[in-house]
Image (cartoon, rainbow over all chains, first blue to last red; front, side, top):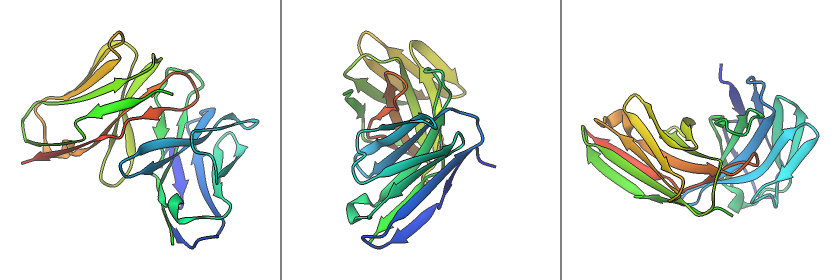
Amino acid sequence: DADVTQTPRNRITKTGKRIMLECSQTKGHDRMYWYRQDPGLGLRLIYYSFDVKDINKGEISDGYSVSRQAQAKFSLSLESAIPNQTALYFCATSDSTVLRPQHFGDGTRLSIL
Amino acid sequence: KNEVEQSPQNLTAQEGEFITINCSYSVGISALHWLQQHPGGGIVSLFMLSSGKKKHGRLIATINIQEKHSSLHITASHPRDSAVYICAVGGGADGLTFGKGTHLIIQP
C-alpha cells in the first residue's frame, strides 16, 4: 500500500461544481502539503499544514480551501471549480524535522470543463 | 521568494552517455531536493542535500552553497532513466519552491 494516498486519481467535472480531493498518509508525518502542477510552470504550493490546528496559505491559495481532519488526512476543496483550475494536484508529507525529504502521493488529474 | 532555474529544459541523449542537469537558485536555503517524475505522473525524491555531494547508484548530486548551484549527474544513462527531473529548494518548513523541470529522454 502507498504511504501517501490520493483520491480520486482522475476527475472530470463541470464549471461551478464543488470538488474535494482527499489525501491520507500512513507515514505518521506531521506536515502535509497540497501542490498543483501545470505544464511549463512546475509545481506550486497551494496550502500546507503543520498539524490539525495549523493551516497556512501557500503561493496560490485563492479559489481553494483545505481541511486537516486528523494527523493522517488533509483534504483540498474547490468550492466552485473553474477551467483554469484544471491541473495535476499532488499531496505531500514530511517529518517535523526541517531537513527531511517530502513524500508525494501519485497525484490527482483534475479536468474542469 | 526564491527563484529556481533549471537547465536544460529538454535533453535527449543516447544510452550510455553521461548526463548533467543544472539548478540555480536566488536565495540561501536550508536544503535542495532533486525529484524524479515518470510519465505516469508520480514524484519520487532522489536526493536531499545541504552541502557537498551525494551518490546513489548511477546518480550523483552536488551542491555549491556559495554559488547557489546544484547539479544532478547520471552515469551510464539508460532508457529507464527517461523522466522529468525536478529541482526544488526549501528554506524552512513551509513547503518547497520548484524549478520547471528537465525533460530527459534516453534513446536506446
